Image 1 (cartoon, one colour):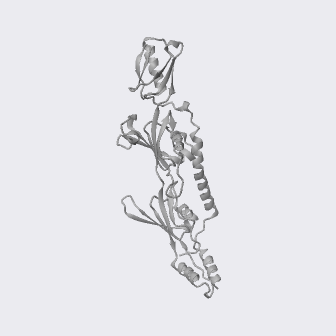
Image 2 (cartoon, rainbow, N blue to C red):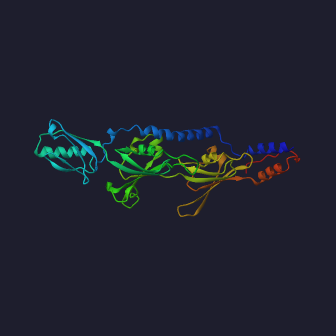
Image 3 (cartoon, rainbow, N blue to C red):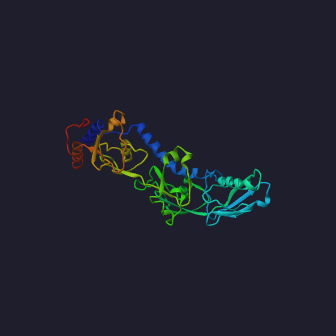
Length: 345
C-alpha cells in the first residue's frame, strides 16, 4: 500500500508539479552550448586583428619611427621619440609627434617639407619599435594583473592574455559587459594603471554578447597605455523552495525565471507547486513581491520574469504534499486506503 501512496503522489503531482517541456530543455541546452563557446571564440577572435589595422595608434616617447621621403634617400631616417614626444629631422628640425598616429605624422611632415623644401613630397612613417606600455586587467578573468603591452593591442587580445573570462560556478562567472576605463584625453598621471579610477577618467561599457557571440568587430576597440580593463562578476539570484538544487544562479544574458528554475535542477516532482514568488528590492530599497505560475509561464499564458541581481526566487511547496511525503518516509509499511491525487493549488 505504501507503493500506492507514492504512485498516487506521483500521479497527483502530474497535475500540479511543472516539468520542463522538450522545447524548454532544448533552449537551455542551446544556451549552455553558446556559453561554452564564448571562451573558444575569445581566443579565436583575438588573433584575427593584424597590426596594419591599428590606424589610430598614438605615438609616444621611446617609439622608434622610420621616416621615408620618396626620391630623397638622404632625408630617410630612423628616429626615436624623445621624452618630450619629439623627433628631429633634416631641414625641418624638431617635430612634435606625441599623441599623433603615423598617418597624422605623415601629413604634418608633408606640410613642413612641402612649404619650403620639396615640391609635392611623398612621405611614409611607420613604427619600427613600439614602446613598452602597461595595462591592468581586473575582475572576472583567469589571470588578473598588470600586463606589459608592446605595440597596439585590441580588447580581445588583452582579455586572452589575461587567460580569458571566468566561468567557474555561480560566484565566479563573468558578467555580460566589460568596462574599459581610460584617462580623459589620454593624459598620463603619476598614478599608473590605477589612475583611471578618478573623476578624470572615461568608462566605455562593451557588451560582451555582441562582441563575442554576434561578432560585432566595432566593439573590439584598440587598447592604450594606462587603460584599465575590468570585467565585472555576474550578479546572483537565489532559487529556493521546491527545486532539486536550491542555491545561487548567475544573473546574465537576461536570465528569466524559468531558466533560473531549470538551472536549479527543475522543480521537485513530489513537493513543488506551480506557484512561484520573486522577492526583490526596488531602486529605493523597498521590497517588491512578484508572483507567477510556472505552468502558465511555460505554456506562454503568462510572461516570463527577467531576474535581477539579488532576486530571491521561491518555488512554493505544498504543505499537504509534504506531510504525505513525510508520512510515507516515516511509515514505509503503513496502510493507506487508496492513492491520493492532487489538483494544482
